[in-house]
Every structure is written in C-alpha cells, then in structure tokens.
Amino acid sequence: MGTGIGKARVLGEYRYVSGRRGERARTHTHMAPGLAVLNPFLKSEEYANVPTKTGNGPQCSDRDGDSPCWDYPALFSGGSILPKELWSDNNANMPGTRLIVVTDRGMNGDCTGGHSFWVPRFAPTLVEIVLDSATNKSVVNDICFLMDYKSRAITGTANSAYNRDDSFDMECSPLKYDARGLDSEAIAPIPGTNYCLLGEEMGPSVAIVSCNFKKGACGKVLVRYVPEGSDLVDLDTGATAISAILPAAWRNKRPNRGIKSVAVSPDGKTAFVHMQSAMGGKAYDVSHAITVANLDLTKPRHAKLAGAYLYVNSRMDLTNETTWGWSTNPKDTKISETTWASVEAGKGANADVLLVDERATKQVKVFLADYSKATDISAFLAEDPMVFDAIWNDGYEAGMARLAEMGVVPVKKALVLDAAYGIEGFTGTDKQELCLPLNKCVLAMGDDNDFGIGNTNASQLNVIQLDRCLDEIDL
Image 1 (cartoon, rainbow, N blue to C red):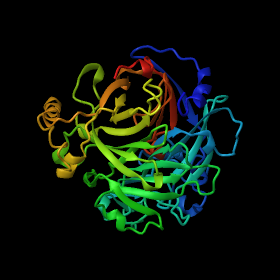
Image 2: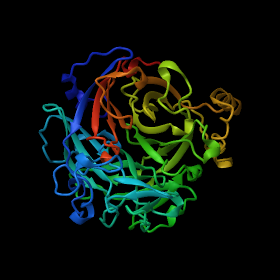
Image 3: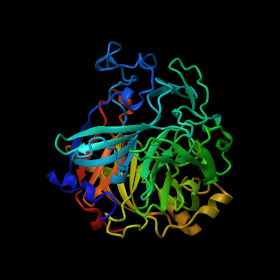
Image 4: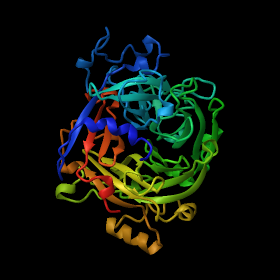
C-alpha cells in the first residue's frame, strides 16, 4: 500500500466495464459553493457584474461565451489525495475519498499584453473535496485561500513586467502589479509535514504552503522558489521568503506557460517539477522539449535543486487513432498534471515513476514515466538554456537522433490512456488538469472549467477504470 491507496478503496463500490478503446467513466459533479465561499473577504460590489444562477444581477443562463458564472468555480486546476492528518474537522465521518485541489488565479479574459480580471482581488484557493460515495457528488468540505506571511490574501494578478503577461480590469485598463501574485495550478502534500508544494505558471515558481485544514495558518505561503537570476527575488512579497534555486533556463518560459504540475515522492524527500510547455518564442514552436527540475525536499523550507531532466512531449502529427485533435504544433502540448505513481506501477514506494497528463486542444493523453535513468541535463542548460528547444526544426525523429548524438537519455514513458480511443461515459471537457491514481487500475481526472467561461458548466471529476492496470504496463 502507498500513500492514499487505502483511502481510495471507497471507490471500489463502483462497477466498471472496460476494454481497449472503451475505458468507462463515472462522473462526480461538484456542489457549487459560489465564489463567496472560496473568498469570504470579497465585498458584494466587487462581483456585482459577474453572472449568477440565483442572484439579482446578470444571469448565468443569459451569459455569452466570454462571461463566467459565479456558481461554477474552477476547482480542478490541480489536485492530490489529501492525507488524513491534514483533513478538516468538518464532516469527519463523511464516507468517501478526500482530495486537496486548487483553483487558478480566477475569472479572466483577454487584453492586449495580458489578461483582464473580473474580480481582481480574488485569491487562489485550496479546497478540500470529499467524493461522497452516497451521492456521487464532489462536496466542498473546507477551504483556505492563499495568504502571505502577514496573513493577507494573495491575488492572482501579475507580480512584475518580467512575466510578460500584465493584468487589467474589465475595461482593459492596467492594474497595479501585486508582488505577491501567484497563478496556482498544482498542489501536492509533502508527507510527514503540514506543508504542500504548490506550482504556479506566472513566475514561474513553486512554493511551500501550509495546507493542514485543521490549522489557522492553512493557505499561508511560507517560501517561494524561483529561477536563478530571476528579478522576482527583489520583490516585496509580504515577508514571504524567496529563494532562487530553479533552473535559470526557466526564465525563457513562454508567457502564461510556467509550472502547471508538481509531484512529490511518498517519503516526502523528492519532487519533480515540469515546465508546462516548450520554452522560447516562435522560433521554437516545433520544440518537443520539456525540462524537469528535481528538487530535494528533505527540508521543505530550504529546498535544493538536485538535477534536471528532459521529458519529450508527444508527436501530434500522427494519423488515425492517435491523432491529437486540431493541433499539429508541438508548442500546443501542455503538461497539465504529474503525480507520483511508483506504488501503483509496482515499482516500489519511492521509485522515480510518475503519471503524466499531456494535453492539447481536443485531446488528452496519460503516460507512465520513469525518470530513474534519464540524463542529468543541468550542465547543458547552464551552457545554453535553449539547447534542447533548438534541435527539432527537421522533425521529431531528427530531434531524437540529435539527443542520442549528445548522449542525452530523456525520460522513458509508456502510454496509459488516450482519449482518441474514446472513454465510455466520459462527459468532461478537454481541459483535464487533474489526473491522479486512486489505485493501480483507477484514475481520477478533473477539468478546469474556466469558471464557466466558454459556456461551460460545473467542474467535473471522472473516475476512470483503465483497460490495463498501471502495474501491467511495461516501462
């Protein structure tokens, strides 16, 4: 048994019929709490123009595709099994698996040079979810919004011009920079502590966050890790410590394409952090290179960089059953979630084996990935931060051949699930940003519904029976 496996057995009451090209899904729809539950400090006038299902203002049923819905928070930007010692005291006897999930920076639109914010003071929020086995509902059991060290709510607005993604109000007038701003996208508890590792795509950065729902400090950002040489180290973040330990190469990330996934080992000593997409500008649009940082979390508030690896994202120019939706451009692939899966894969508790969710328009693929024999590319990145993004101009095969010439072994991976084959009963969107194993044969996948923008409905979590269990997949 590994962390979370025993707790997930409540899902065993569900009966699945599975087969190649026909994984079966069972859907949980969350009991929408409304944003006021996530951010109780907000004033009513701050969200008066946000469409609602029940209020007196604009109605969700009348909204256009660019408008959110107050009652449809985006709860599944990332998540993990929540260890029992971190559970809230609320509904302690409610049956069901408990998750910790995280929202992103909130409801936004597009402006030249960045994004507009419907509610600029919205604070990204950690949420304790119970998959209620009696009702098939995902119940919001408790929340704690992100705070700085002085217990002030943190927003998701831009923290500096360094991000190349400024923040605006709904009239596209610039908002002031918030040095503490975080666009949270991933969350993973650090076993044996009251902390979680949080990933965010704006900085990019990762942070150590208090995440014990029993404690008043839940949601407090204790330390933030940024790339070496980042100007973020000079910001006033409300006394929250900043340490520049991430690869300097990550300063070349694409706007709004920072860190969307974090994975922590069962012993709490190691984390793998992936860049969301290939780095650089248009000259590198054909790059398949995803860089991965290996962090030593033995002392979470004093983490160290222990190495870097290369993960090669999937080809999207293949045909027939493996076609990736509408996109044929590697830059459009995103690493949306990673979770430690060594136990479920039968590789031992702390083996370097992860579940990786790759996503593009209209397509989701999930891989089992082994990092144990990948080459440490730290020296390559120090010499040329874009070296691995520059080798794909002649195609995928030529890029892989160039890696072999360089003596670089990328992360080894094997396909677990491909939405192109179809998943029976699946009703979610293609923005599957939560992906974690509940046991070796069952995955939970949740979507980011963008707070109802695009006429999406409530966030959904699908529990999926695989056609092959993870320990049956040959790496």
